[in-house]
Amino acid sequence: MTVLAFFLLLGVVSASSSDHLSRSSPAILNVPQSAWDSLRDKVSDRLHAGYPYGLPCYSSYQNATGIHADAANTDICATIQAGLLQSPTLVTDFGSYHSPSFGTCMATGEKCTLSPSIKENPMAGTCYQGSVPDYYVDVRSVEDIQATLAFADEHNLPVTIKNTGHNYQGRSAAPHTLGIWTFNMQPEILLDEDFTPEGCPASVGPVVTYGAGQMWGGVYDFLANTGYLIVAGTCPTVGAAGGWVQGGGHGPFTPTYGLGVDNTMQMKVVLPNGTFVTANRCHNQDIFFALRGGGGGTFGVVTEVTTKIHKDTSFTFASLGMALPVGAQAVTEIFVENALKWAEEGWGGYLGFGANNLTTFISITPKISVEEAEESLRPIYEYFESVSGGTIPFRKNITTLPSQYAFQNTPEARAFVQEGIGSMIVQSSRLVPKETFQSQESKKALVDALVERSQYGALLVTPYKYEVPDSDRPGGLGQSSVTPAWRQSPWHLVYQEFFDPADDQATAPDAVAGTFRGVSTAMDKIRAMTPNGGAYMNEGDTYEPDPVASFWGEENYSRLLKIKKELDPKNLLSCFKCYMWEFPAYPNEMELTAFDEAPQIQTIPNQ
Ligand SMILES: Cc1cc2nc3c(=O)[nH]c(=O)nc-3n(C[C@H](O)[C@H](O)[C@H](O)COP(=O)(O)OP(=O)(O)OC[C@H]3O[C@@H](n4cnc5c(N)ncnc54)[C@H](O)[C@@H]3O)c2cc1C
Ligand SMILES: *[C@@H]1O[C@H](CO)[C@@H](O)[C@H](O)[C@H]1NC(C)=O
Ligand SMILES: *[C@@H]1O[C@H](CO)[C@@H](O)[C@H](O)[C@H]1NC(C)=O
Ligand SMILES: *[C@@H]1O[C@H](CO)[C@@H](O)[C@H](O)[C@H]1NC(C)=O
Ligand SMILES: *[C@@H]1O[C@H](CO)[C@@H](O)[C@H](O)[C@H]1NC(C)=O
Ligand SMILES: *[C@@H]1O[C@H](CO)[C@@H](O)[C@H](O)[C@H]1NC(C)=O
Image (tube, rainbow, N blue to C red):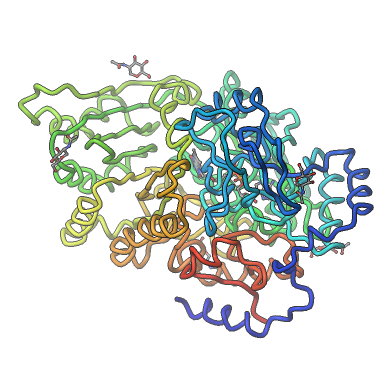
């Protein structure tokens, strides 16, 4: 644990408790009906009770106010069950989470399970509220957000912001909170070829501007015939303006054009005190710094983002794969040996060794030709050919694609979208810096660790070769708060585990905690060999042993804490694993039992 984190822990002891939002008797259950009625008026009836997505599939339902019989609606349940493998369907409901167990209470096992493996309709048993907020406002305007935050402030209610529910650490769910659901804030996307951020002296060139609920799929469709591309995630249902960019934001074009935070030109945000501000490199730079890397759900409710776009050109695409009859050793050596070369060549995408010994390399690069790519990737396919004397078929497709849109529509990119849907994904990750790939000794240690782990994925989505403009360098007005390790690392290494939310053994509290802890400790070996590495919070480890150093670095973290304290002195926007000053009196339920050893940075030091 870092020195700073140690002081933060001390801060818990001395924190004043009078203002704290209490969990022992959640304030949200004591708000008088007349107060709810007046909020409902202010937000044009868009105040609702939050229900778990699976509720219509159960015969009874238990929330904070009691047990409710006759909950089932078999028609609605049938529709829900039919859509469980459809990400675009899953994101449309407030009570639905992409990694479904985040909507449950993992510490007690109280859940409202949906799974493709369950066919009964309705199911006997009880659907529990779990971690789904009791009430939420389906916000459509700045005024809706302001009214909701003012209400939360008046009644001391912790607020959970939810957009698509993709978050891998459960940050868009929390029990007994007031939800702000941004998903339906989807105004028309605007393209401006010559955009000058508010209050700035000069144009930054072509941009698109979109709302809080916009998903990447919509942005891809919008840009399809414009001649422009954008740095964006491959999954079309990840939100463009929410957690993705506020935590960093990567995609296959990151090696060429930088992270989401690097391409963000302007953000509009409702601060916790209700003030609506515009932040960019010329204006409110502290807020702009915090909103680009500090993490979603922490500093305010972002309503609109403006992002740089780039000339779309044809580029080289490579897709290689083989189910190897032998283990990972040889192919892992090839991946590690070539990591720096491939990073120099601009490859953006994914490589890995997965279930059934399936080896994959799927990437794009605008920097080298198909002929050069054939040469560069030769070690992979020559190895494939050498296996069993070439009698086992393998996939090799190295070709030119005309546009970003064409890449998004390859079967390879589409397959990413399906990964893990319907099951719970538990993961840890590490940004592996270049020095790891520079000595024989460290390369061997890395190969050994990966082979021992067996299944791993390396995302080639780091801005390792991207040149940060002067304005965004440390000390510059446009600096972002993501860990500097991003820019030193050719690999974003990910370990994952999956479990079926319907598996009672796997979802028992001890088992869940064991799975999270297991995937976390599996990464310890890599952490130990990468002291200058870091980690991506959006695809991070729930048990990350040193979140301050891994996600931001000490200096940037203390600046973030200062900004948080100023913007949100009451900590209305407090979410699980948001790290900036969580409530001592309001840990997520998971912390209470199942996650007893999780690192906690609960409160702010007096500075
Ligand atoms: C299938 C899948 C694919 C992914 N692919 C990629 C990828 O290619 N690249 C990548 O970088 N990441 C990827 N991720 C990770 C992704 O960036 C995170 O899950 C991210 O948190 C999602 O943000 P969201 O707004 O869509 O989801 P949510 O879970 O709704 O929100 C995430 C966090 O942001 C906060 N938040 C949401 N909206 C706002 C807002 N308007 N203002 C303030 N806070 C807000 C929430 O409170 C929460 O803390 C992927 C995740 C999944 C599940
Ligand atoms: C609990 O569920 C009941 C029945 O649907 C609903 O009327 C009530 O608003 C819910 N209470 C809370 C606190 O969410
Ligand atoms: C994967 O490789 C291992 C050798 O390391 C082998 O024992 C196993 O049978 C292989 N599995 C498959 C599905 O090919
Ligand atoms: C290679 O990939 C492209 C893009 O998906 C596809 O159009 C083409 O048919 C593929 N070629 C082969 C030989 O698989
Ligand atoms: C913050 O991060 C940057 C890189 O993004 C790093 O160089 C710098 O030293 C860190 N600290 C501060 C206060 O900028
Ligand atoms: C809200 O917070 C911001 C940032 O701290 C501050 O500049 C502004 O004056 C505050 N507004 C009100 C109404 O207190």
